[in-house]
Length: 213
Image (cartoon, rainbow, N blue to C red):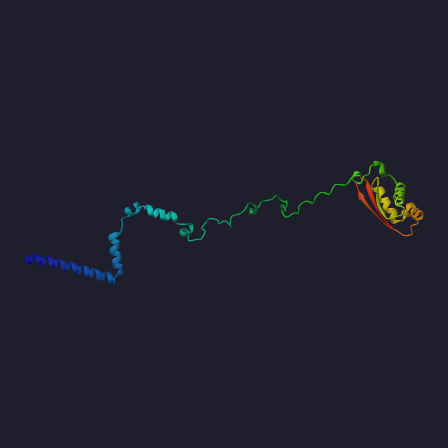
């Protein structure tokens, strides 16, 4: 019995010394522990091929962003600012064609409609057909106010006759036409006189007069 006990104690002592020696060898030679661990835990090539991801690993992989996988902030995906708008996309134009000018000013508004004879209370019977008719009408309208200040208008048939009227004021032909007679008849020494023209619908010319004494 004692002999068997001594044998067991001897075996245990040998195992203890071997374990201590192994620990000391790993301590002074770290590479030895890695080699032993690799020998103990290394999978065979067939086991490595058959290894698959667990559900937790797959879920973690899905949560990874592009930047986590590529190391770049945006990866290959364009951000909102880098996307091209339709107006930014270059357009190939035919040779000789000019690019559209989007900064062009809007077209001017059409001119206002011309006034008619009726707008001034006139009719065809009031239209003057020559320069003498114009002189006579001016005398009659001035005489109606007996030399006092007044404003009045009359209408001639077209722009040609209207130009003749204006020319009579440039060459002072209006004086002999009606003004001298009027001033003599109503004892007018000095007066103020102005004339303006307006085109009417139908080509008629309205002549406006302002007389001041």
